[in-house]
Length: 308
Ligand code: EPU
Image (cartoon, rainbow, N blue to C red; front, side, top):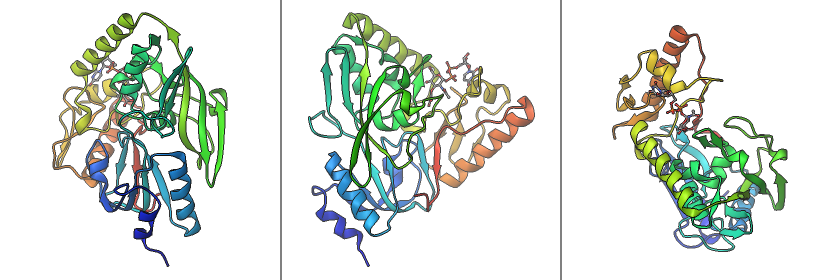
């Protein structure tokens, strides 16, 4: 037998939370409770927690900023490991350093911080990430993109932890990137990455970040109440445009609504739950299929209670 309380000996105080609401840890702010939430700071913490779980046959899963994921209303059985840092610090999962034309970033660094750090270093290529509400690890997993760019274009290498304790580095080619997707060992945990960027005047880089930010403000609802784009873009088109033309803007189920600003965003009025969100997703998908003949594919991960 085991008790989740035993996890408390593995990490610093406050870094294990039992019976924790996932609504507090996702940007869409829905979902029930996880048996335990772990907030590791280092690779060593990750080895400890995943090792503890494996020995006891307890499932675990990883999230970054919780910006592209929706948990079931029943929550999730097992351990959720959240990798999100605040201030950069060496030897943690949120290290951030420049080395010639390379930027080294830990998996828990937010893309916004990475973009502004690169700008301050006079290194261009990550400006598009400034408005993406994810962290490096999760964003690499989903090959996040915006403004015609995606992360894979700047990645030199990716550092992985393959439980129980293998640390390895793969090149971008070995990650087999495609649109919003990468193809690596599903058990591998991304712990950091190296980005190869292009030197440029910081002022010009900052200007690009500012204009991207302005575009997002004008065309998208705030990240605080959504999970970003709900569906992937079908080849050569915008899912948002298709949903809009199909007439779904403003549709709602309970407290979840198709954004009037950008139809590929579902927004949480504050009263949303996952069941209503799934109903609205189905309605939108059905309407787009009937009206436009296109089957939309989810970009956001919907997690069931027995996911891991
Ligand atoms: N459009 C509409 N109605 C809408 C939304 C969009 O007609 O409700 C039209 C726009 O007017 C524009 C076209 O569709 O002509 C494309 O719109 P937008 O520039 O907003 O780009 P998108 O293809 O809808 C993609 C990414 C976004 C990213 C933006 C900006 C995907 C699924 N979406 O959206 O990424 O921020 O470009 O670069 O790839 C995300 O991945 O979570 C995400 C939000």
